[in-house]
Image (spheres, rainbow, N blue to C red):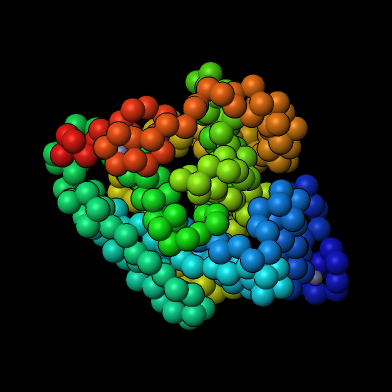
Length: 301
Ligand code: SF4
Ligand code: ZN
Ligand code: ZN
């Protein structure tokens, strides 16, 4: 029987021997989502929130829930999709994202690498001897920030879930990069820095498995395809490692996040001056160096 009512359980959560029925799971999931927004003060009334959508399960769940919450919390939303130009992958997920936004009546803007930098990612990979994700990650962050500002977003919400954050924290720990971990957390960026739009992660306290279950039970039409360039081997090793550990010792992922949240203010304080924000001499976007990483890569194309 369901932990909260008398219906048949369909989901079993970590550390719970009893499961939840469909409607109790929806209530649990949505409450946690709403609580994350309140607890970390992710959204203020009257803000315009950009939602970074890719067409995958995390971003569409994020869009669906923010859309559901917007009137109650008095904020507005718009979707922003970055089209990297990856044949057989992004072209498919874009269609799902378009349909989803149309059904919810949410405005969506698409910005492509081809229009902005002259080539789709597939072409860039033929020209540059760099790892795909190193190019792609830099350009995506760059465009998300630039267009969030252009479109007047107060903040940009991304679909990062608890698993994503745990993996990043462990990677930084294993590679001795505490200053990179200092830039993580449910809300990032600098408050009064006008050129840098703050990022929020409302799915921060939800496991990937829970998001996948939510999309499945809500019957969202999503193609579960992976990027063919997803060869970030180190992250894949860390993901396998932590998933194995979690199955042997349930609750480990939550413990890692809870410990991090406790030390996060100290870590942010310690590294607050490390990355002084400058502006790129070529494009005037925020950068930690004189020339931003996006302009550096662009110059090699
Ligand atoms: Fe870009 Fe790498 Fe993600 Fe593919 S896996 S979309 S190349 S960052
Ligand atoms: Zn129930
Ligand atoms: Zn630049």
